[in-house]
Image (cartoon, rainbow, N blue to C red; front, side):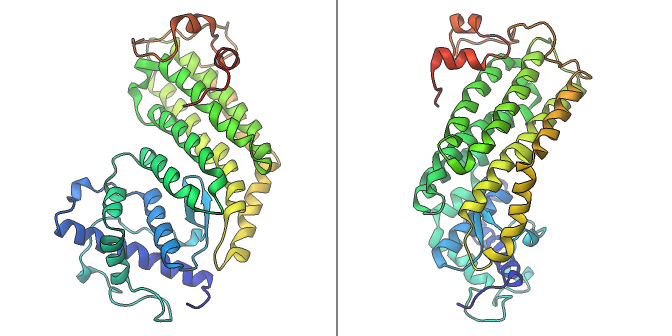
Length: 346
């Protein structure tokens, strides 16, 4: 296969996306899944692109980023609807967009996914929860990737934290059991910070993560003392959670991307990643945390009120931390948890 240019990568990624659309159609026609069962999102699309790139040595430039492997060519982020599409609606079905016959056509990509990837393709496109799927993906494929293997445990710890963060961000009913979420956050931040500490090249990203943990858990603790949240308070908390993805974890992920990038166009795509990482290293993340600190008082979620333990709204017998520890831990109880439990692990 010839050396890919950045423009070639864009065309090849689009061929793969349309191949997946056609594979979805074929799988639906074969009764392997229904259209209602398809839950394919951009994150899992990237994993399918990664698998065919690795399996067929296509030369696409990939790095491990926020949610594991993803194409480094951000210009290829086309709006392609990830739904079953018959071949008659795909203009390039029998040929590649690349100026060479060395690469798969869209149709050949479809048959790779539906036939060669087979049951794993079905699992990827129908998994109900992306973050739960990723936990298994990291465990299976992380150790096999010589570039990213050393980060496998970090990705697993992070996606477990994300599962908790997503429940707070996406489901207003989290507040009914806010005490449990508070302590679950405390428990799940710890392995992420510990894993970062094992990698010298990531050590400088630990401080932002620790500072974010303090800010977010203090807000959750204040929310826990309230009978109910206003729509504004809930929106503010959701926004605070989003900053984990847009800033704090993005900082870590940019650094990992620099360590794991490979493919035909690393030299041309690497500078933009380095520039973003350098901005974070210069302290841009602090501005995002300051925005939470500055605005939380407006929503009556200021941690500078008199300290109080999280009161809870619906304590259950399934609470993983016993009553004795609950009474001993303050509203910002990360240090107490560390003293009582040592290094918390899932």
